Length: 319
Image (cartoon, rainbow, N blue to C red; front, side, top):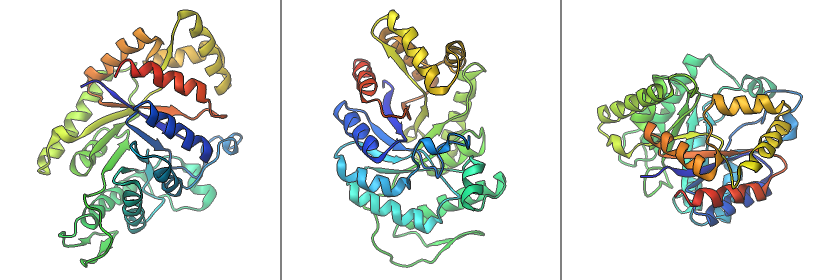
């Protein structure tokens, strides 16, 4: 199976809709929105990119698209009680015709919690919250399940409505090498791996995390081969070598850094970059490591529709 592609989007509502419809037109598998109350932890630039309530935004997106998978990549466990997450997920599942995936993680941006006064327990406690939320959601989505009784969250066993025709798919995303793979394998349909520096022992580290997730799936009585393995990485494809320096210079301007620094970042993180043939070659390497879906972060402001369409067109030749 070739790597399939998704989009991770953060921008104005109109831009998110445009990106999703464009991605759907080009046969992209999924569009996921970042779930943050601040779009930057640099307080000097925080307000440049709008931060919406991701689940409300997705409700609109569910009605403006017809085929593409939608969801969060990912929702911090600190933002919503599992009852709110569950009710929102069931609603979005129905509004989208079964196309919604709820992405969950432990959260990482301290500032968005301190600015808005959201409780932000230590990391270990947040992992406990995540694990209990996953158990709660499993019970909520299964009418035959006898409720949930955890140390943090409880769900009484009763016939609540509505319930989805099938359990709402869950994505677990994060950089933890042990707990995150275990939770993904035990509860999720998708495991989004982040914070693996490809300049380090990339292949062995990713494969180890995938192996841990699949072992956890087996232990939970699930089919480990049904766990979708994904990541987020920028892809920079051009038609000719002459265009490459211009693209790198533009990327540097967007980030307020020098072109040489931008080029080094690309090298350090093994980003697929170059002519489309070179990009395809690198994508095969990512596929060999074990990735089945790659999300392309499209956070540029203003929204660059022309660049996005050129990327989708180039990748369509690969798929």
